[in-house]
Image 1 (cartoon, rainbow, N blue to C red):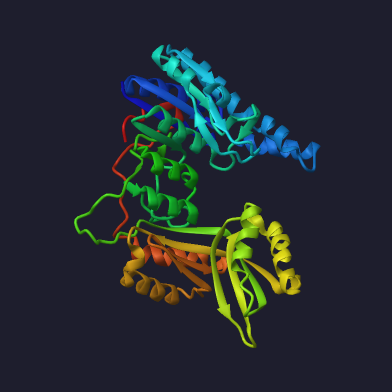
Image 2 (cartoon, rainbow, N blue to C red):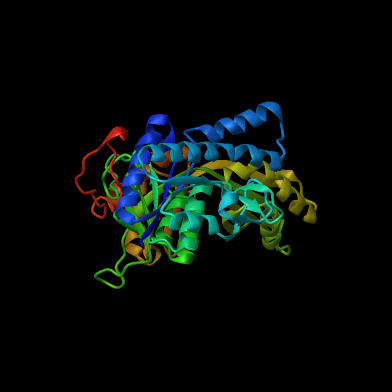
Length: 428
């Protein structure tokens, strides 16, 4: 019997009325597929509200107790949705992450899944029940409740789909799918019908918030068919899967333009030429859990050089501490460390870095738009420009107009529906 895993985001479950609408959609999906597992996020802004509540009683909430608190939101969603489904005449059961056997490591607030037993889910499916699972949570190897950090509910859904060998994992949100750019910034942005796993990871890292890159990476490794779409329309979403061959084996397709504002440029200056601190910097930041998006070594005068790093702005306080320790190795000081908040704009598509015509066109249109480029980094799928934050809008609009208008895939005609009129998702 075919099996689908659906994940509903907090916006889709924000009110009792929306929960009832989702319940009807789930029941109809059950009739279409045969077996269904539903992963839920907390209602609306419940997670943010719980975090704010914790900070009102404690300046530094204990990670274990924070996890105990933060899992409440998803448990509320799962119980309410199960109740609503039963009122539509279907059998349903709600299960926490620990009840499902989602086993994690011992890292509170950002745990990694190490195993999914799933016995209770399989038993419930055999009993023809719809299984509602609280996303974002599990139980550690030391039997403590844990949360999975950012993108946790997406990760839960994909991990369950992999463990249960589901035919499809649908991520259902308040967007129609993956677009060629942020529609709020570029009105002419269009939904794309398909993205490869690798393209979706790069789009997510670059700022597209439709699905967390951690979940997509998991889907890639276990070859889970993915679809990202809206819980508020009848339109098909964007399919995500292995790379597809096109008419020309070496054809290049710009999938989209992304932007990320929470970026910090860090320079470590006046480093003596005979000292190689790159590995020390990477090791220090890695131990602190700080990912480095790019790093460059620039020569300076007088036997010195400068190290340039691009990191996420949320890590800025820890970066100053960690790099301070490294600087002390050559008897430097914190005056050697400089930080600026910047932004990144990325062109994403398979084979893009090997297409000089795209990078040439990009430089031309950015210059015409008056965008000053601070740094450029490339990979096999991306060209990323570091720019001032106030130049992101002109950069994205210019690049999208030049590179994506022809490549953009318009969504098929379909009727927008209100939550009360939602219909079954079906196969994308």
